[in-house]
Length: 164
Image 1 (cartoon, rainbow, N blue to C red):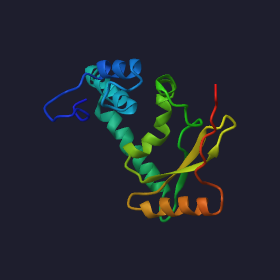
Image 2: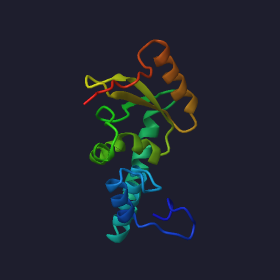
Image 3: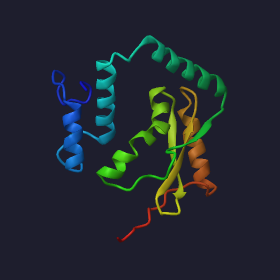
């Protein structure tokens, strides 16, 4: 919670900010929904004393396992989200908050990843993949994204408007 506060010596109240975000559709909060969600989770972990050495060791093991799998110029391709992008608005974002873990885990493990739009779902919502490489291999993820775009497998398309 201290990390997302506006001033170094100020702490935000994540639950209060989250409620403010939900009830005003984000208009009265200075923070994004994912940042507030992370702050709430962080606060719960600290209060329940769940942050332990074993959890950090599991993260290090996963990082080493993925690093070993991406030797040389190997890249991995994962969905950006397990579902098409959610529609805008506070409720859809709140309901789909946990889906961000698919992309977020690579950020936490500090692997370079490039998001690549792949088209639209049958509902007209954006879909995509992320190309992930080993540390220091950002150029590979970008090159693969450019190649997929060049051959027509990827590329941005505007979402379909649903006039309801």
